[in-house]
Length: 171
Image 1 (cartoon, one colour):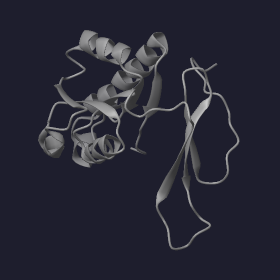
Image 2 (spheres, helix red, strand yellow; image 1 turned 30 degrees about the vertical axis):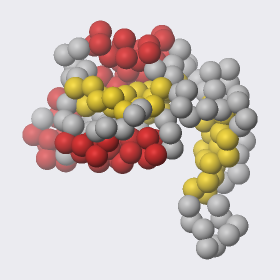
Image 3 (cartoon, one colour; image 1 turned 120 degrees about the horizontal axis):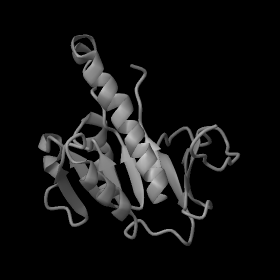
């Protein structure tokens, strides 16, 4: 039996729901396939939805996907707390009004992670070793971070009743 579940919603092909805390759909991201001249993703927002009031905690925000996602979320008007051990790829976000960088190793500071999750509205988890060379040389370290620490994040989100978007790789 799963330790948490999300409500099922029927959507058209290539649609992605974003749920509010009470289970309603706040907005739907949809790829527009009707107009061939536009390949951009469009956002349909509900009248009860405000991007500036949502505090997003982006874990692993200093990686390739995380840094690009953080910049996009800031451009859309979200408030983003970006947690990572390396701020290099987030340098372009410095000075943004709704941006906070948090230098933190979650394996060494689990109490800080719980506090940050508790203060957020949405947690986006991108934490992982993403280097195939490490997979062979340090398999136990990879398992610990990519599975065990991510499981702790999911369990903390459930305990704190926070929404979680979990990224993963096939490795």
